[in-house]
Length: 301
Image (cartoon, rainbow, N blue to C red; front, side):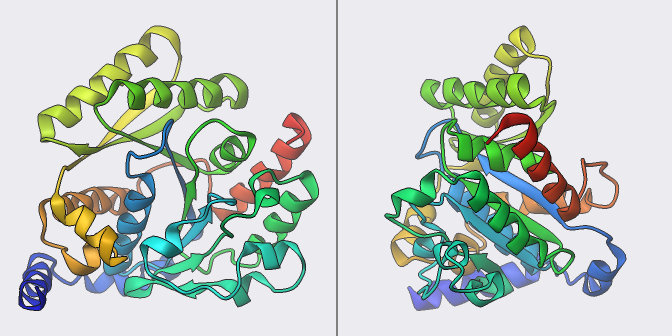
């Protein structure tokens, strides 16, 4: 196993030429790109997608921060095998600052861990949300990317983080329940929060055709009933190396970067990163905080 891992890492390095301009890219950008990852139902690989895209973006020379926004049932740290002494609970309780709870993940990725098994955190009140906003505000412009891993479903906290983000990535697979629930999330965000644009990733599909098929099915429903734009970011194929990485509590791109799924995630990350400076998004980290304030006032959440 160790020999195979070394071979894959070496192969991955050969496949990824060093981009020397990336080292100074952070200084050239004037905002943090804030992306939320969401799904209608659990089990589609949303958290895995967040983690591995973070690793891929970090490998490209970006400073990446993951916010585990599944506040009551945190699992980013579990999937990465990270031991966390402090969590967002300590920040909201006034016991620690946001800087004091950030932990290091693979390839230089930073993680803001949430608590697990704390029911009160799964339904934040206005005061807690404001405290979290103020804490995150201190991190403005320190990172190129803030990736927010929301929990599945359409709860108020899920809508809160999605609607406040500059971009929303919806992770689906080709199962009817996944597509139905993804449509429900998009519908709520479109009708109640005036969101008009969503990016879609087909995960755990047989091949590119099945990935496009899943997207097309969702697209038909959206075109029929909603006035929003869907953009297809690509697919990640079913790969036994994904489950192996989960069992090892490591990021797939850390231990099997040249696996089928690993290469697919890297390709999606390149597309995301290449369009950073060209793509017109709703704003960066500063916009995120303004949106949080607006949502507090307009939605009463």
